Image (tube, rainbow, N blue to C red; front, side):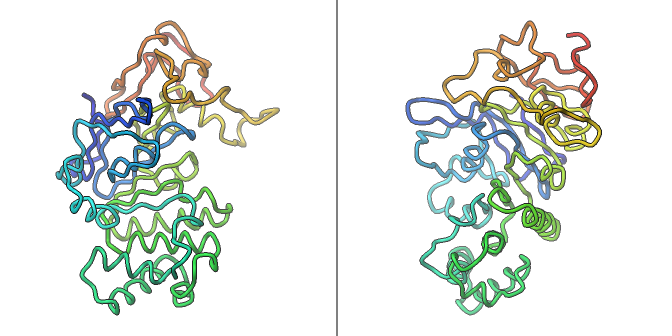
Length: 340
């Protein structure tokens, strides 16, 4: 089994052969492996429907509606088996040692309670604080999240705040328990462009100051370039490429990675219309038998109709699920196959 290695030997999260099955025995995540190192930002990238959020929720053993079961050979957090944890240990893990920021700040908070009450309740659920101490910590976390009027935000209901303020407040709540892992699931999707940049910069600063490990789920490659150390490219329930962020943007190795990057606006390449990837991500249960990107790939050739396995290329631990990898001129703008 190939495990996608962290950048150093200090592994915080280790996942081996993770699969997520939906109702009707439909597999949505199909046997993926990865690691996250201490203090490392790993970006899980792909279009909607690739299985990114299900992968993240599986780390917390949280089954959303429609999911039948989670299977894995091993799932560890600091060497402790998440897949074997009981309910009390899972409660301590969720929101305590591993916190999650969701993509829609409008629905992240309970609309019936004030922001401050929700922060205080979260802190006291995971830390042995008095209400006064929890209130003081909550105010400090709101300030660290860039909310200048922390007292006003503390006493407000969620609907009284803007989207950016709600997301900052939720980040403050996620970090108030001093987690070692922060899972950020499309944290900028519902925000305008200016606020998106502010939230990205906030996450980068807080992760650096606190030494956090960060699992960033996104399809926004600009956010990946700003935050990530390493990238896991996901397509149709599988990891198709694992590389450093520098490798991904300078020389994408999988045709899917390359296609996504070529869709980015560029001053160096002029197009009569914005470039796109034809077709859509196949639905779980309707995947091609061979390479799952074959129907959308402009470079499909003989051998692509066979199942593809992750293979190492180069000498830095880079992994690619494509039998043509290494035989493509991978640099963006560098042409097609040079031989198989």
